[in-house]
Image (tube, rainbow, N blue to C red; front, top):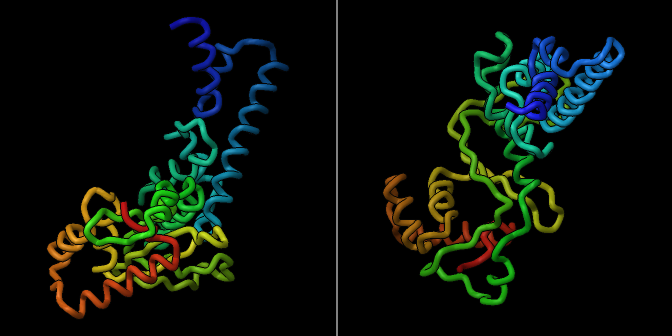
Length: 255
């Protein structure tokens, strides 16, 4: 390892190791220089902590942010060079054993929901939208185009119903169950909205989303998954679902 590699590794370890004494030895300098490195460590970790806390407004009203974030930085620090990705990395790292003993059973579900909301808000502009508008036709005999600014989320708790401002988190009741959600960015307001889906509607969107099969093929695959009949009643309900998703800017058209 070259001297430059050692120096760079020492800086990374300074920021993200609980015991960073060896890093200070590699970086060298007197007491004044080492004091500056300690200040730099605090500033960098504080900036990451601020970004994470802002990303989970509900989660950190339920659990204490500081010890959780500090442990994550020590055990599994961010790998992405982009600040916007750190919340997602924390959400993936979270597991029951790192949470406080008194954390609600729905804590992880809430963290992943809030990250999904943020991820949708970050999503790039709708790819393929111009081509769809030029075609001007929605056909079930071709693959569908859905906005990239959407996510289908399945969760075991109704965390999407938790208000952003919690007066008393300890008294909050979150319903358990099998919930399927479509998170999408409103094309007019750019706000992220949540649409509760039936299991059948969620399965259809999950099959349709890749855009590799025709809509008819995707619906048939969903029917096998959810064991429902493609009859007259279904066709009417499916047409209403597609109309609603088109109006919401989720279903853009066909390839």
